[in-house]
Image (tube, rainbow, N blue to C red; front, top):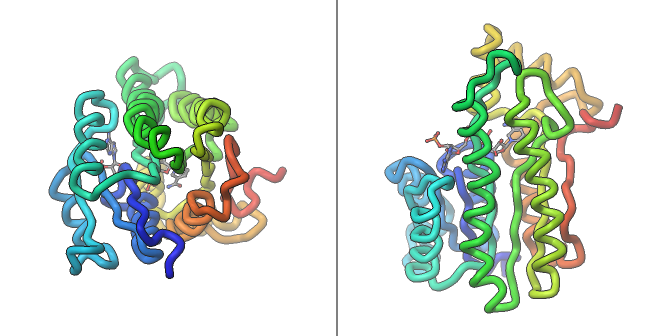
Length: 257
Ligand code: NAP
């Protein structure tokens, strides 16, 4: 018996990185997963590579969807419900960065980051909660970041990620009475394409950037997508049903001092 047997989970931005690791972990523990990502082919390919994909009873679904597009989000959630037979878990993970110092940050840099992280989480959650409230069961997990606490060059991203924490607290208050838990994870440095792109922007080789980042926290290593996936699997499980509205920092202790 897996903790996720019979559960259907929708994970956004799950074609790669942290989202894919969460999808993989849920599938390993028995869930059927809808991999939602911008590129439909990448989403389908990722879904086809998940554990259980080779059996019709445990297979998964890949859907192309821009999480900041209201109509596309409504359609994606309804497709998950009709094709997989319901929805029990939503992970708002899709994300982008458009880093720049404030005086160089454009309107587009601001709007894009707000739209993907904040509006995307809002649209997805509003579409999924209809089903969660009707069935008196649901788990919502939002991806925040240590950058929520402030980070040079990330005024847009930092504001969005702190916004995610307020959004999560409000979901906890509004949806708790309907059997729905909402929590957030704030990862520290996680080795993915997103942080590799930061290394490139800083002109540092990826391995050196990871080494320097790892050395700067108490645990003395960088995080990996699997670290976030393990936390996600706990927070969206029945074992965490008394936890709601919380943001858990999974950062090797980076924010302790
Ligand atoms: P990643 O490797 O860049 O993957 C992000 C995924 O989201 C990509 O597959 C991307 O698709 C997809 N995506 C982007 N915009 C989208 C949209 N509008 N609609 C649907 N999907 C979209 O990022 P990651 O490092 O795994 O990060 C995942 C989440 O964790 C993000 O919310 C990020 O802010 C957060 N986080 C990451 C770190 C870290 O150190 N990596 C730290 C703290 C928080 P494309 O490939 O087509 O662009």
